[in-house]
Image 1 (cartoon, rainbow, N blue to C red):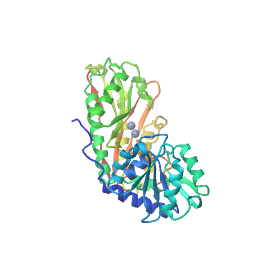
Image 2 (spheres, rainbow, N blue to C red; image 1 turned 30 degrees about the horizontal axis):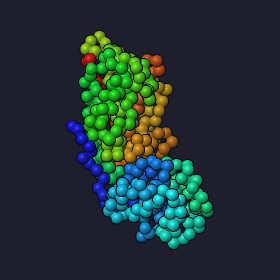
Image 3 (cartoon, helix red, strand yellow; image 1 turned 90 degrees about the vertical axis):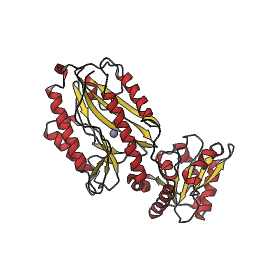
Image 4 (cartoon, protein in one colour; image 1 turned 90 degrees about the horizontal axis):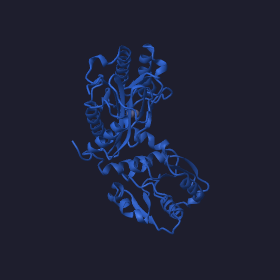
Length: 393
Ligand code: ZN
Ligand code: ZN
């Protein structure tokens, strides 16, 4: 299959999200949310704006009924007005000219929305990835306001995916499944990791991703390095290859890892006993952690299920990273599946479950799925087998 995502975020979603964001901002005692270019802007307005040095800013005042304004440089007026939140009238676009000071526009938009002078506002929150230069300018324009991070009020909204978001995540997961499946058909023997990584990128795009974001191909001893950068090493028969790939589809991330074994068609070069045991432990730990997903279970408890199983088999010191991360508009976002995060899982949270075992200098393995917390248990978006795939060529 080729082509773009068939699922998508329906336009009325954005007005709903803006209303919830505004209510959450009010409950947090903020005068306004100030959202720059990035995933928060895409979440609230459907606007994947260019990350320019020129200010683009969505002003979300907390006061119910007050106007929502998307401030954009004049030359970006067309894409700004075309984003779903603007096209449906949920937000109004205000543009600033090349020679104008955009902070004066921000101040006047805030004054109109709040009925108070900008230099008397007491608390605003800015999007987490906003450029420091913009934050400092905003602090100059709002001299008495206390600044905080918008993620404090938006994370609760963004963690719980709506059905449109889950549909996109599922479509992205299935596309990534097909890419790993195609790679696992081989041939792999005699090719460099970098060459296979190139094929991964091409296939992710051919399967409908806007772009590939990462393409870990880690062969032989490199498989013991979780974030190995695919290089010039030539893949040989008789070794494992960790393939951890993903990209964005309709703005939402795919992220799958499968570990395969390359025997080159020679059964004598099949998985050695040590690797086979390691893989079995890992597969069972990943399955147990996934099965434990349900509403009310602490995020850290999912990590503990995987870690306890791996530790019981003697590989505890070889599982050197957290079990997972949230996934959505960002490849890594809340909730993190890690010791210390006691936050209970809730229905429609989406995250990876990806334990790994790494024996430095020898080999390693990781298995990763994207999982949505369903009302009664896990909804595993990836459908590719988790049994060890053996590649003949
Ligand atoms: Zn991954
Ligand atoms: Zn991941």
